[in-house]
Amino acid sequence: NALDALEEQEKQLAIKKCLEMLPSEDSFILTLYYFEELSLDEISKITGLKPNNVKVKLFRNRKKLATILKQHLEPEIIESYEGTYRTAFR
Image (cartoon, rainbow, N blue to C red):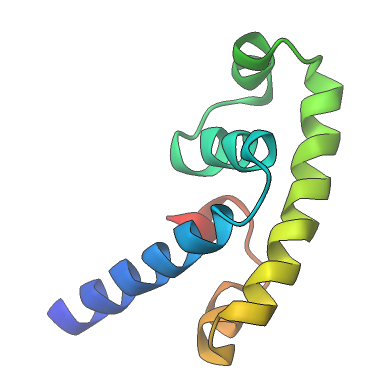
């Protein structure tokens, strides 16, 4: 319904604001993976990093983002995304 759509838009906006708090390379890799839905190989080609390095950076950047999210988002938003990865940022 319209209320759910509005809440989803608010969540995405809040997450994007938190992404902006990360260093640009970290934010870029997360954006390519979650918003552009690119594979590790595709991100590797774009960034010039090896796929395994991209995987490690995604892992580390998710941890950094999680810390920022916990500091800046309402608990209900965090709870709605716990346990999800690829779909967490849609």
